[in-house]
Image: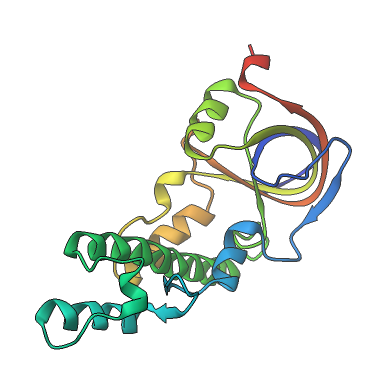
Length: 210
């Protein structure tokens, strides 16, 4: 982790209303990434907007497939009770809950061992002024590309230490420790977390970069 002042880096933004000379402060409130989990529950919403939490919804699907329960008329309007569709729904729900578990454990480790590092829950992710890195992250996250001027604290760390599977809690914490320690590979895949003052300098495209 280090402190930077008036340093320019790239950012890929999905917010539709950013414009040149806008100023922001990141670090006090949840960012858009974690706000999604703070606002949204996982489940199935039927056409009449009735919401079914995951456990209740899946138990109903299992009972229907076993023949012990009748299909729900409202659910049937938007869900055909096909096992493959059920697996796809479960995969998406599992992915989101897995991410919640990961982020909470990584934040636990940060607060305990690296409290001065930017938080994944409150930071903004930025990219070095390197076309290879920008192309890599633009393929993962599509959006508008901006040059930002930053003053605050920044951490560059290796993305490979982010757990992406069902490890046990001990392994989660070990990998989280290495993530926050800032053990980086100096590659385009490195993550850069920033908290502090942000000024929007310019919107660009990949074609603008040599």
